[in-house]
Length: 370
Image (cartoon, rainbow, N blue to C red; front, side):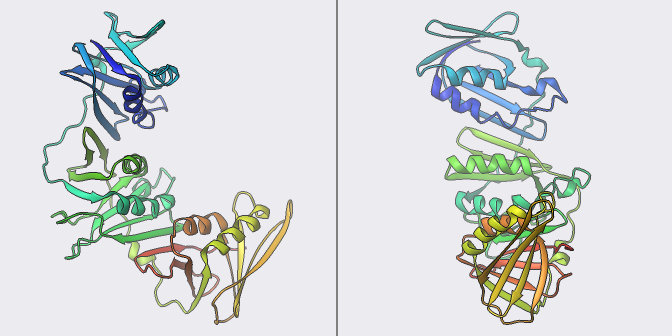
């Protein structure tokens, strides 16, 4: 393998792999990327066996071939080199020689045959998606995905086609303490024939979100246990989480008696200040609703206490309820509306929070005993 390639093109290619390669060293081979020089392009492959990415960029290929090398080492070296052309040569011992002007690096590599077999797909049933809408759906749900690996089926976002004529899709996530649900129409044209839901792992969603940051045109398909996302030369394959997602509709409270409407920005900035003196682990704060006002307070014997009052549109009974401040702030940060509605029953029941002008986004937060 022998080729020349522009530094910027190579750096862009390598940067896409940095969060995919395995860092926990469960399989040492997975810290590598596979480089393949073929035709007039350099192809790259990266996988952690859950998320896999392949991409390609134009290069001057003098000799075809392939080799696997450390993704981080190669990226770090290329990043520090000046702009210009870089030459890559595979040595007989599977080392990769990188040269530019008077710089020369030799990176230990391994034979391509030791790299895992890359997943493939055969489907042609790809759906075009609106990047802005899909990105919004991810950002409105990814923060409440569970980190508890013993509840593996909650370690991702549930994605399903609602099966209606408007092509509405739903994303749901929950960690048992909170739930986020958003309905949108992310696809252009017809929706998928298969309306059964799938669970997309958090890491896969983060990589999809990065693709959405740089591309306005994406398409996706589901084949077997894989979600395939592609644009131009980039193909991302995500292994879906197996298991049954819980009946999330049972977790959404109905017929709530009390409702407060509050300025999102005012409540968010108040929570940031008051939570500074809350318990640093539980982040517990208290909301005390009165006629026309809401008092937000925290108390920590080791740090002190804080209290602020803001105006709200509330005419119900006086109600005092505790929440994790971080959970509230995560919800508020994900809302684009100027005002939010907080619906409640009592201090022991979950709260329903949603944008005042967007009924298709709902968040549920369980209260805390304070």
